[in-house]
Image (cartoon, rainbow, N blue to C red; front, side):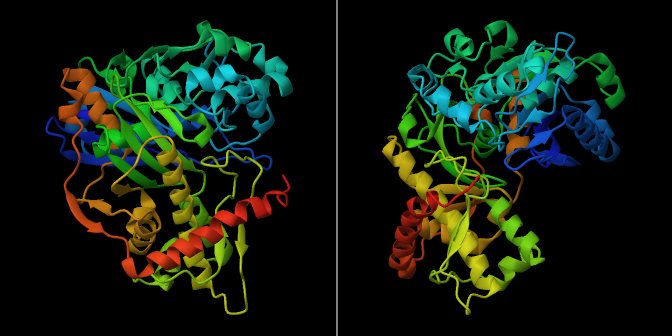
Length: 485
């Protein structure tokens, strides 16, 4: 048996699979986000441990014999978080999360140093880890002076699970300290933020062994024998392993809290000016590109909180048949935007409201706004040398066929639906645990699921969507000067 642990923003998911990759069961532990100031987003690392224990306890209650047979564990996690520890591995402050934008000034200053783009292949985004440390150095110098270790969220879990300070390539590529082409820490970039390699975890590939489960934890979970932990992956690379998006040309669109358009690459293809992320993949000698929007289902959840209706009720009012855009446009920049704008201060808007703009019309605009933001990502990927012929949809938002039809029509490519099953980050992490424990061929393990169906672009609405996308594109420069943060 093999266990995948996925540390997300809203919870920890634990999934058990057997040697044939059949899902035995899964369980969850919940998490909350603290937002003490506008643009801030934090979590206590101790809550990650509590949520993991809660999830594993759920598995133990439902599948004690299967959990006892676990031989490999894989980790997936929300990326970019700055978890700061002292020399005794004590947490110095709450973790600053991926969607925290307080360090936008520090990010701009680091990005102005040409070495960062040259070595990492990426813009220094405010959500990345390096500018967070620059912010801490400036605003919390007493904490910065005590920093012995900087760990990413899932790697803090690894420390608790194994006692090891280790990470892997895909997650570390999102720090702005990794030489992404050479797959190693850059001492030069670390020095630019007054850090050195001694404060960084040891790096392995995502498929390699990265510690063993501590005996006391194994005993409390009812496991006997050695359990190997894989290096694991950042959440998007782990989802790619779960979806089998590991070979050149394969792609998926993820509608989670954030939105991601992800393409696997057989070589390193950086183009920082496009705001496309060029990261190491979880498999050795592979890379990937992705465009990221900060609010996907988060935009619909915000709309739900304002209207007092659930997301399901809102999408139900829109119906199942794709409609032409109404003329109301939604910009989903609720916490800034990454691809293609790299703008932490921009904020969202509804444009074109009238007396006739019903709740259903606003919901339709929210769905379209996210679809057009993903179209922005597609154009950015194309400019970086990667074209996409079709995508597979994953994430909570992919349950809405209306939304998927909107995305297919906005992108102009078919959207495939995987067969029933859970092929997300926890499944990908479990696959990595299997590979690390058994030495299996990663490509033979990370195969794509069967396709249950395909949603094609609605040809009759192609022109209407093209016109609406032009309006959408024109609005960012129009409102940029009006956003106040």
